[in-house]
Image 1 (cartoon, rainbow, N blue to C red):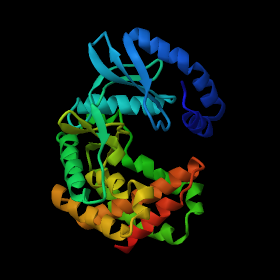
Image 2: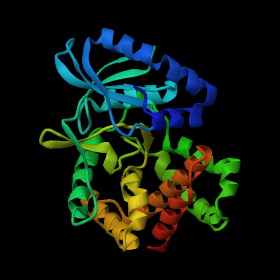
Image 3: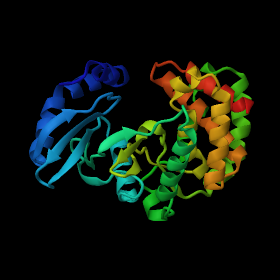
Image 4: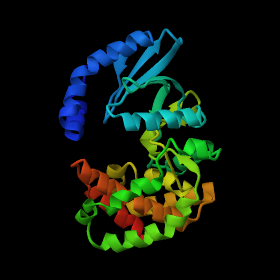
Amino acid sequence: MIPTQFAQNIISIYGAQGKTWLENLPDLLEYCAQKWQLQNLRVMPNLSFHYVASAFSLKINKPIALKIRIDHRNFMAEKNTLAYYDGSGCAALYDWDETVHALLLEQCIPGIPLASFDGLEDGSIFIAAHIIRLLQSKKITAYNSQHFPRLSDWLNIFKSPIINKLPTHHHQRLISCLQLNEVQDAITDFLLHGDLHQGNILLNGDKWVAIDPKGVIGNPAFEVASFICNPISEILTQSNPREIVANRIHLFSQALAIDKQEIKVWSYIRALLGACWALEDNTDHHPWLKIAEIIESI
């Protein structure tokens, strides 16, 4: 069964291509079930823009998570990132099929996402910092770097007309932030997860692991930015959002030995990236602007 909201998400982003992909999805699932001898295939809750199901693979004799993406570029980025991390700090990649953009992944059990707020803030930050240290335990080689985008590629969206839809006071601020970090990104050679927020950190046995990496080469300070900005709707409903964000910046700075100002700048950039991506996807970008303004005020 294909969840209604998931289908609407796919069609809203991919249009006719998405509709065709959804029509073919049952056949893709059957193909994967036969290829990997899957039993008890069950769709995961809260799907966004890719299909994920749990199952048991008789072929490898393990519980698995099956993930199928619509687009080739993001499939390759995630596959290459998971292969590079090789299970260090993230869920393991067991196998893949490029023809149908399918990933056979380690299933995180019990799969509880990392929680924040209500006395859990500090602990969750130190867990995330530990995962970041694992993910960044090796520098990427010149050969491997050819398989991943750079953070500077993501920032090119600020050169597009969509930037004109943001309030004008952010434009000059962005220019100074990007100039400050341009040289640093050019010499950075770490492969970042790229979207390491609380929902992408799951309990797996007795350890926490990352899932759903985007894979981008860039400044290590950018890695904490998604965590600092999320979960965005919940931060904005707290009584003290500025205090929460400031505390996160401070603790990540301590845990990872990264300058607080550098974390603040990259978190501000990440918030405006979120606003631009929301505008591209025709979703509400205003929460991202509110987070950017909170970060700017610190």
